[in-house]
Image: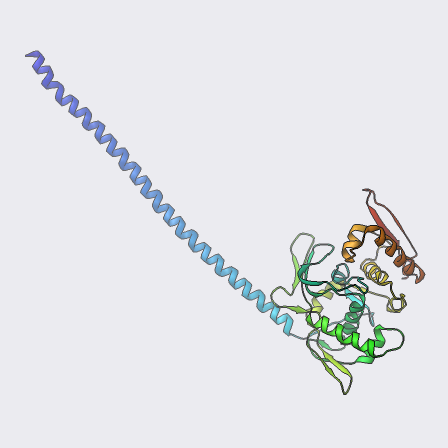
Length: 339
């Protein structure tokens, strides 16, 4: 009987242990399920919040972009006065003078740029679409800016074509000069650029042509009877000249630079961007900026001829080619006290 008693009494004990084990398992499973449910709910709530934030961010970005478009549109459409004290003709923004926008390409076939990132110096990006511009085109741009200064930029300017050519060309004016002028005006009208300039700390200084296209020359028309061009200049030129970020070029000396030495004109513009009496430029950088495709040896020969011309006109007092402290070839130019 004792064995039977033990067997019968052991059954409830075994069943109770199993029940407790089962209950513990259920409790643990319930806790895990609850935790998972809480986690899912939290994840779902987080996902909902994240989606809501993403939508808000997208909306804010869209509104910011729309606001930026409106700001630049207003800048492009509001006539502004360009006030450049102390110059008649020969002022040009430093950012453009330090770029490959205008290059001494001589009579080579012009490259066509399609949103090309041009060579620049400093914290700026310049994208350009149009035919490569040469120094003669640069002279024309500076003349158009000078003649437009008495007017609000963005309003029409009328200019006799012979008067315009006399400002930028020496010698006799004939049909070939008129033909060139018409081609160049068309080239400048079709050219567009985007310029973004940043401060030393990386923050945005200004941007031109990002939202609303910027043409170097605005609407252009020609009246054959009066032989006059009517043109407009984008008011945002004022932005590029702001904070005295422009060069004043000695126009009389520029017009005396001899034919075939456009590289001297490029160097003159580059020199004018800084008041430093001694200026140093790496030859690799100069070669890229000038869109010079031939070997470095030929480039150095052309550079020497250009520097001799600058010395002849006393735009520089002296110059030399040497190696930098890093062993790289460079051009060093000394400006006279009065250039």
